[in-house]
Length: 192
Image 1 (tube, rainbow, N blue to C red):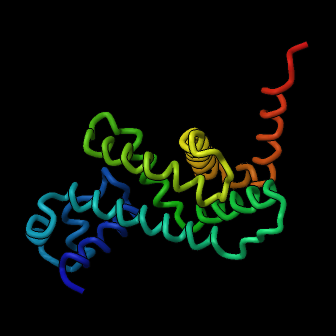
Image 2 (image 1 turned 135 degrees about the vertical axis):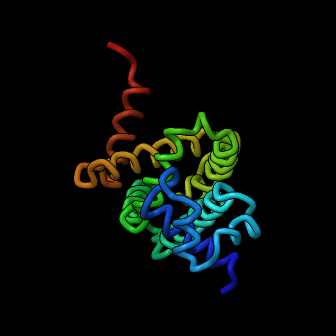
């Protein structure tokens, strides 16, 4: 493994251990076992390195989620049961990636001071919407996929926040399906 890869791996570990704002260039260089100058040589700035590490970590989580949601997919199950099972797998992924979610919320909290991160998050959000519709194997008309993906993304972010604060009270996949049924019924039932 070369210095570039060592730095990227060390930056991910530092992000998970210390967060984005508290990680110093010295922390990363020490964890990688390289000189401080290596950061400038390979990435230009500490921020560029941390951004690259965060992007890689998010890609790894996305790849893991694709794998997990593709495993043991029961095509004969009722769509609501498949949907609930998919959410349970997403929730289980939070256990494996809690530090990644904590870092993302840390960055979101200070996004006004990081326009490049705002841009990167916005681009990632746009790509994620349609990917979520596909991952959850929803049969949504093409013209409504963006809206469906937006809802899935909002639920995912909210669920991650709930899970980080209190994993024991975060809803299960089945509870999410029941909540969606209740909301759907209230939207289609005329007011008395």
